[in-house]
Structures are given as C-alpha cells and as structure tokens.
Image: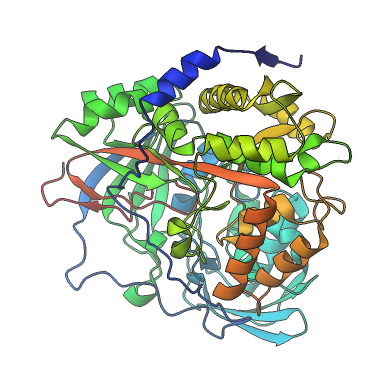
Length: 554
C-alpha cells in the first residue's frame, strides 16, 4: 500500500531553531578528501597505459595488523559476481573481486588492476592487454578468455548498467581482449565500463554449486574463509597473491591486515555498542546522535568524509507551473538559509554547497567557494518574489520528498522559511518506490527534495539532472533549454572537459536555477585508536586491507 506522509508544522518553531544556528560554519574533516586543482584533469581518449602506476607504499611498508572487525549494516545475501547491488553487497564487494581497472580516487583516471594496458585501435574499438600471471585463490590461471566470458556473462545478466554500452567482447589471444562499444565515450566513460565487471575464472564459476553465492573463488589479495548469513564474513590474507609487483598494486590490492571480519549489525544503534564493548573495531554506521561521545573519548578516532551526494531542491518546469519563472526560483533560493539548515539537520557534519556537486568530484573549481551562491537574504527574496508577480499568500506549492529523518527536517525548514516569504508549502513525504515514480510526474509536485551524485566528475550530477537525452527531451524536472543542453554536452565531452567550460556551465545553471544545490553531509567513520588511517572506495565503503594500523594494534 502506498505510504504517504502529509504534514504542516509551526513556522515559528523552526525559525526559532534556526535563529541560534545562523552563523555559517564549515566542518573540517579529520581525514579531508583531496581538493581538485582549478583545472580538471584531462584523461586521454585511450591511454596505452591507463595511468601511471598506482601509488607505492613506503619502503618499509605499512604495519600488518593481525585482525580487524568491521561492523556493516546489512547482509550481502548473494556474493556472486553478476547480481544486482545491495547495501550489504557494496560493503564487501571490493574485498572479494578484482576488475580490469580500478579507480583509487573519484575524479581521477583508473589504474591497472588485471589489465596491464588499454589502447584504442579503431572506431569505438579498444584492445585490453591483461597481466600474464593472474591466478585466483584456487590456482586457476586467468586468461583473456575468462575476461571475455566474465563480461559477456555480466552483459547477459543485465545488472551492471555500464555494460549496456558494450557491443561485443572477444578474446583475441591468451592475454588480449577486444572491446567494441556502441558509442563514442565522454570523460570517464571507458573507465566506468572497465571498472564495473568482476573478473573470475569461467571454470571455477561453472564448477561452483551455487555460482559463488556463498563461496566465491577470486583473484583478490584476500580469500573468503567463512560466511554465516546474517552474522559475519571472514577473509584471510593470501600468501600467494598474484600481483607481486608493488608498483602495480592498487589501493584496493593492499593487504595491511591478516584477517578481516565483517560483522553484520542491521540496527544502527548497536554499532555504537559494538564499538564500546570491543566486538567491533570500526564502523561507518554509528548514528550521528552517538558520534559525540566517541569524539570526546581518547580511545576512539572519528574520521569525517564529505558525502558525494548533493541535497538538491528541484523546481517543476512543466508548462503552466509557477516555477517556470526564474525570479520565483531565485526568490526561493534566497529565502532558504542553508548554513542554518546544516546546523539544524547535521551540526558539524554538513556544509552548504556552491553548485550541484562538491569538491569530491573531479573538475570542481575551488574558486566557486568564494563566489556568491544564493546566500540567505530574505529582503532580496521578497524583492524577487514581487518581481515574479506574487504577493504574500498568493501561492501554495507542493514539496515532494523521501520519508527519512534528514529529509523530514529539511522539508520542515523549507516549509517554515518559505512561509516567511509568503508561500504556503504542503509537504508530501513518501517511501522510495513511490518517490521514484512521482518525481517524474509533473502533476505530483512543484518542488522536489532529491539527491544527486551520478559519477566521479563534476558534470556527473549535472548530467543526472539536466541531460535532455536521458529524459525524453527535457531536464529531469521538465525544463526545455537548448543552450543548457549544448553547454552540458560540451563540458562532458573528451575535448570539452576544461576549466573554462566547467565554469561556463556552472555560471549558466546558477543563473537559470532549474535546480538548487543546497547542502552536502559528512559521513562519520568511528574507529578504535589503533586504526591510524581509514581508506574508503568511491562508494564510501571501508577497505580494511588498505587502512593503516598502529604497531601495537590488537
């Protein structure tokens, strides 16, 4: 049955809360993400070597810890290589499988993993050469035939979306594979395909009674020794890991701990208890309300990482909707205090945005952080509201959002602050299946609170929201703007991904404001003191083998 929550709250109550939070603050992460340079990196169309070799460890190498226990929030259920994603699966995926290439950091070119080199050899055709010494934990030699079989199996399963761009994959020798694609690729698209499909032995997979669902045989530096569904997964460091050249060991090929235990704890409140009782060493799922007590305890370290997701307010651009007026869209943005929103929703773990996207993405221009971006100004909001042809009380709008804790608070703040502008906001918060249906229905909302990420580069969330090719000739929120589309296609192309074009798109979208990037949250990772460095993948999942540990850890 469809579950919908409709509510109205006292504007006075929320404004009182925000009044004490008006000062704009930006939290400093304990482990700050890398800041892209002003000019975005330019990956070549087809590097002969995908990138320079991965960063090498220090000469002495990191400390090899005996054992670490990671608390995760969901059971992966099915560990086989070609099934759909789930939160539990994402938490352990990079420990289990290896890929042709691997992306160590968002917005950078992928580095070699199983593939040694990638070369463009024709129109939409690439030759991938793999290392000749790849073996899985059962001793199966991985050849080009296994690579082609893995990709063709992944394509047939239909769960790995980037593989939809592949026309064919064929082994052309023992160690070379030909990929033919359906289209010319933009920035990062080739890397996305070559980092998506796990590479496994066809022989091992076909011999597996459950097709690796509970006992996968893989090429990674760890082997799964125990899986108790609903309870835990145990991985042991391989002494015979095939990649013995340190310069080609990616961030996810590191093995800095002998044994990794993933403890499945589905109730968030229990993650804090597990850390305090010693049954877990690290967790990314401690509720924000519990984090403060770990921050003040010298036995723990709280690492803060900026989330990739932008919290976005999108306006309805369908014919006849009041938000087809630019002045009204801008009035709404000026009326929302995003700095106060951060303090009210996630104090110390949130920052206002300066575009749709943040500095996690490749190509983000740090100069935007110092440029005006609709900072709270109720006087200016009222002037624009009048310029749009409205008086206080003239307008009632419907705000659509997900029924979760942070969205509830943000919706309440927006409702109260637009009330100060003179707009009555009816809020509809729904469950995920209903939301994913209604946000594409122009009759279901006037404003929608949504989230956007979509990839590794700053144009990725822009494509998600604005690309008219993906959305039946309009943006996802029903605006038709050919100039916006032309700028978007240019900045996301191989030759057009320059600082100048990135800024041109940003300035145009900022002026038109079809969608308003409001805030990004920070994710907390709580660890016992002996974990000195936390490493996460581009999905934000902890990679225990790449983390670093004190000499006396455990």
